Amino acid sequence: GQYAGWGRSECTHCGMGKYGDQTERKYEGQCKSCLSGTYNDQTGQSECKNCAAGKYNEQNARTAPCNDPCPAGKWSAQEGLSADSQCTACVGGKYSTSGTGQTSIDACNNLCSAGKWSVQTGLTADDQCTACVGGKYSTSGQGQTSVSVCKSCSAGKWSTATGITSDAQCQGRCTTGKWSAQTGLFADAQCQGRCSAGKWSAQTGLSADSQCQGRCSAGKWSAQTGLSADAQCQGRCS
Image (cartoon, rainbow, N blue to C red; front, top):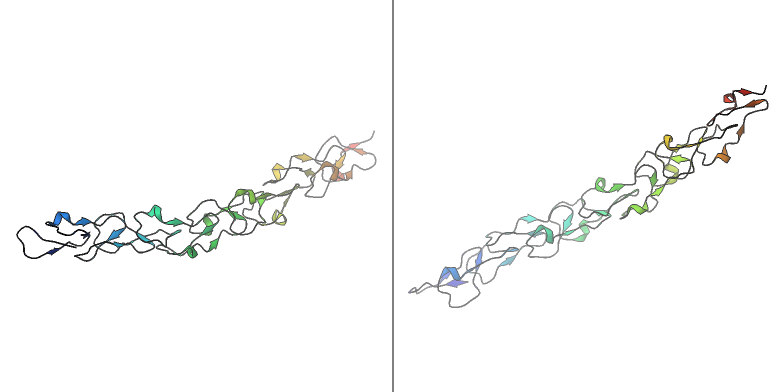
């Protein structure tokens, strides 16, 4: 960690941010700069110090401890990192609220809540997880990593709510006179089925025409579809 110029009787220390790992150095230029991921805050050193775990340094010849922390949503137990990309991101389905400079995977101790999922890494909040969209729900619990966990609301139902966790929370129902065999609806307007002519239904949430159990009463008829009451059977037998 020292050198001696020509004609000098004493050695001079390699400066901070540098080190010397060879003997018989004659001039300062033979001192080497500390590389990224390391530093030296003392003179006369034969090696550089590694950045502490949870931190990194992109510069050469650094003269002070590394102060760039792994960003929020990441961690590293490894010393001597030279870039943010070397920090480890929390995996999909998890997130960290512990802030920057974390040194343990335990920082990623939060799971995307039920009704949500995420394949994205490095999240820092539950609201960064993706909620199951309207017309879908998930019963798979926390920490999910695929949209495939989001199941469709059953036939005859619909929902505008996101992030729901059961079919029972699909609280919209195809309105009276309507039905739908299609699953995963998010609006009543998507209930395309209509009780066929001569039928009616005051019941909601139907999934087939056969469930339209009302019939135009004796002496009445209707060519109109989608009726919800016998009073709407306007035709009369002549």
